Image 1 (cartoon, one colour):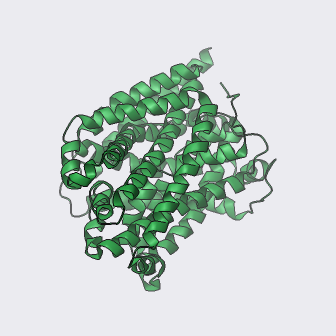
Image 2: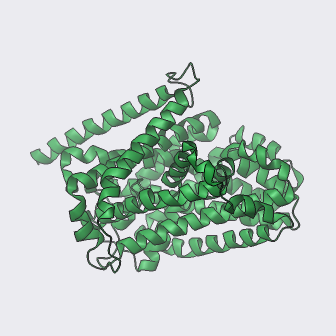
Image 3: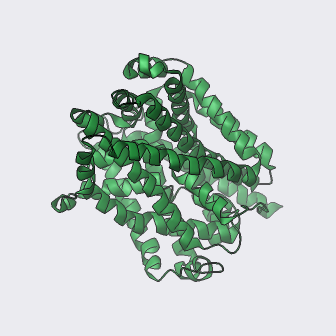
Length: 478
């Protein structure tokens, strides 16, 4: 079932896709990763991979969605044959599995937004609040609140997504700008700027900086997830795919950069000694323990803390909406009406998100398994483009009707050769990192083992391949 829904304008499409791309990873992961990987040196590698991973994959996804007007499963099936539909199913599986625990993250943001608004964070130690909150049943409640809100948005289709994006995304950018300006005007903030924007060129000989930069691009731009493909289903015929991809890529990374400025300038200005602790704190520790402590030491800190958690909540919700839409779009392609599909997806996320809401160990495991799974998803999209024909995709779709910016043959090489190599290298590196110095690297029940990845991926891929075969037989019989 192809979609007849459309975004009302290019502005609506851009804002919705920016909402998809800009998430908590921009605001809580990027500052920590850039701080632990050389500051300015990391930025150089990060920009390189924006150009040879994120933007080329975004162009491919836009082309897939615009050409087929179907979700990830239907798009891959239409482009390279029904027997490869399971590859599109993998993208849907990864995004949906991430939605199961990402809604928990969004719930954390909602809880801390309330704590900052009510003044609770001003009277209670942030580490104590975090420990009490995550060891209670409260995360289930906030998780369900977020799911209900996101389902309500997607319930009304593309118009609902577009209307919300037109409000939340400009507001999010304004909030991040306010926080960034405040951070750079703090006494001593110049040390943070110096750290962030002064590259040590010799550090670029360290392969880990390049791999971390590629990982950050893969995780925080949304390229290779299938989310852009899903929104491209609703784009108008005359749309400039290269321009859209560049706007989203640079727009997303601009938010990341402002978040890095905000966090690092605040750290160097308020408590330079906290830098090492923040680097080793992890995403949750940085956001929900260290940042409240830094804001508490800042003049008018409660106001800026509230702005911070409001921005984080908006980023989480808009990303969550895109994940629900991706899953629902695939269900709708099977002939299910939108509202029934959205209800099914929302119910599944509500139920399967509970384990991550109750246990940080389960949360960490799922983040590990499906975060690395996204690398395989990106690989599948690149292979699909290669099998369909990168030259045909480039000339007929990327450089097709509505595209004022024409992409050269360099894209053919990047998407058919470089992106697959990058995806494979990333997967091997992450799995090798989990295996080295770990005698229990095959332990299926360990949160960060190779064994847990292999088993969960094997179950997922087997189920998808069997379902795809059944789907093909059903189509042939009808």
